[in-house]
Length: 90
Image 1 (cartoon, rainbow, N blue to C red):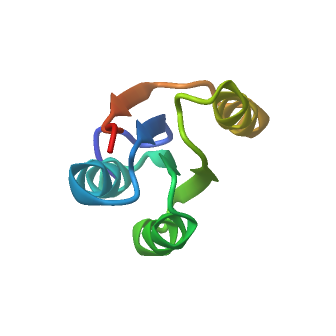
Image 2: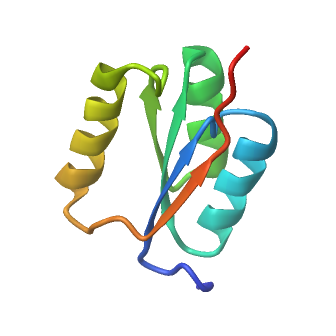
């Protein structure tokens, strides 16, 4: 295991591009990664690729999507150790 063994990470915009690369690296280092993304197909593919990940669909500028993310992390009951924001406006 790596430097993030048994840690929990969030990567917004984690289903593609730099966000996906960051998510993969966190998982390689041992973290369980919660990733957000607006495109459900990309999000599902990213979760499958990463392995140790949970995908939360939605736009993080929407408070309901943030609530779903918060609830998912809280349900895991291990706290939050790392955050990375890769989301962008398009």
